Amino acid sequence: MSRFERYLTLWVALCIALGVLLGHLFPAFFQAVGGLELAKVNLPVAALIWLMIVPMLVKIDFAAIAEVRRHWRGIGVTLFINWAVKPFTMAALGWIFIAWLFRPLLPEAQIDSYIAGLILLAAAPCTAMVFVWSNLSAGEPHFTLTQVALNDVIMVFAFAPIVGLLLGLSAITVPWQTLLLSVGLYIVAPVIGAQILRRVCLAGGGTARLQALLAFLQPLSLVALLATLVLLFGFQGEQIIAQPLIILLLAVPILIQVYFNSGLAYLLNRMSGEAHCVAAPSALIGASNFFELAVAAAISLFGFSSGAALATVVGVLIEVPVMLSVVWIVNSSKGWYERGQAVRATATARPTA
Image (cartoon, rainbow, N blue to C red; front, side, top):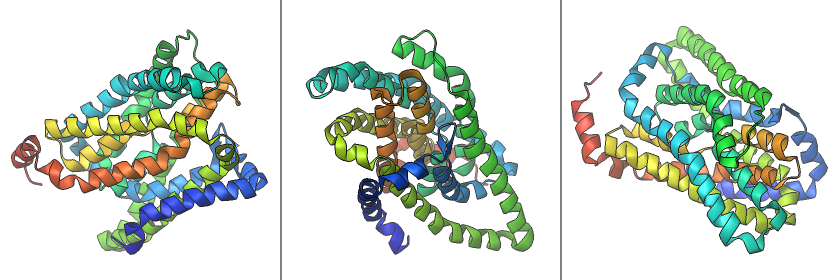
């Protein structure tokens, strides 16, 4: 681990503060950058996400993708957390904190809208950023790609019914343009591009050249992550300063949900005997959110200035720093995880390649 990576928490905190400050001092600039979007997908942020996810995608060898079948436990746990636990626990947390505990501190007219935004945030699992978290936790790249692909297929059919059930709405408008563009921009295109890059490297210099490329890309990936933080907090700098209490209160159920879902996924994987390289991304996938889809759906259903839109934006703001803390937890607890009886039994029984 480089000195830069060792102090990543410090850089994250500085970038958050810098983003808020710059967003307050130069709101016109950040509004202009924030306006560079297509179907609610911000293009500068999309470019930075490409830089963040390419190192993970370049590691993928499609000839070995069939090996994912041996990680069926991790796939089952992740699907269970994403679709049977996550949306429903967020609805419960929204009711407990927003509709009950924090009700006297929030605008009465926006209570239901805030809860709706939280549900929209939890109803769609993350796509592109999962590759970033998996890369930082030494996750199994083939499992990560397969899991993201599965979630995307399920999301097409399950997002609207789950949101409709929890919100009590009979007709949910799914922002299909945002959904399809995000999948194409964050999954299909970078996977194809990374595979072309991988083949060029292997043909030109073999594994040594590929490793040299990864060593070059890894620092760029972290710089892109920090630049994304500056942009995200810069976009909302004025709003953070204008209503810090509301943002803080909305963040509470989101934080609890992230740690609960990631912790539950991590423990279930350990109990089932899954390898740590699968359990780590499984926990991170179970906690992360597809914020572009959530924001687009909130705006289309409730309006740009609604409480629902604000709640999804709060989810965007805390996504990166909170997920980095989950990455730290799963990395720090690897020794404890691998001492699990089921994990050791599975590792002993698994044939060596």
